[in-house]
Image (tube, rainbow, N blue to C red; front, side, top):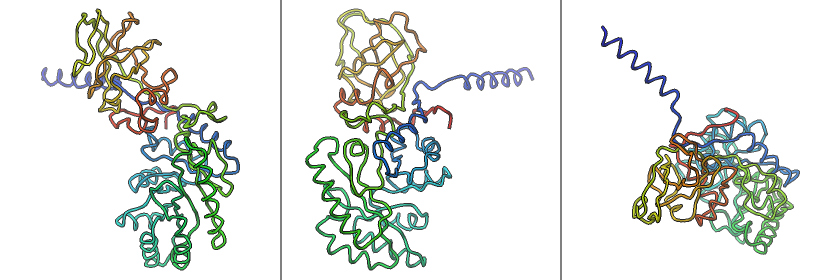
Length: 387
């Protein structure tokens, strides 16, 4: 009887400790900042409807929470990459429909058609298949025509429209209601981008002679911030939605509010002697006694191994501390010699107000999109306000 009582007391104690045990690393997301950034996009592209791009788990911010928050901001669509993401948007229960931004596989098309999701067609094979599905159901299926005006990834080539458009118009169960394309160098090459806009405008003009277009969209974040597309009545903010500007020379850049903060926990603090290696490969060796903090995050969480040896720093008690040695699967090490009061349990900021993700991307020779979408599922998303 005494043993059973002790066992119950132990279980209750464990449950209490578990409730107060926070994860070693987490992503904090400011949902109001994301809503604010959507309105910055609207100001940058006035009189333009918005497709809020939430693919890749809302760029690592947590799709469901972002969708719930943005539903009240009334975007026309939520942009997603595939059927699995469209299902997640639908499961939230919002009225705004998901829109699949890329080509679909034959196995996906019935679900896309019957679910009422927005989608593009990039080939005659796709168009004919969707038309057969709609005809079998006795309905007419709306679609957006994708044009390849320079991306080389998907869509009908402009020179092929003369042959393809009449065939598309004579598919009774398929209705083209939108036209879209994508810009590959809107943040880099102004001459090419302006040429691409001109090609897109010519295509839209030709298509509009035969079809009343409800939605015309070309601009993602960089183009929203840099260009005007005369025929467009919709845009697709992605990176800027999450508070990061893909271009520096824009009036909108300073208005954006970063929405994500990545934090971890110091798990151990000790002093290593001079000549001691740090991490795998011994790529770093101390030259003097060094106070070292071990931090509970690694490449399994999305803190990339190629951040190693690139001068990356983290913030502990408001002090920027260099990360030393190679990033390991679950832990990193930082020199905290300049923060004598640091102790196990202290919070470490890896991305946030003092450590912007675009600066980190530049140090690591990558891009902000790569870092954000690589933050793994082992990191819980903590939203403010709670979703």
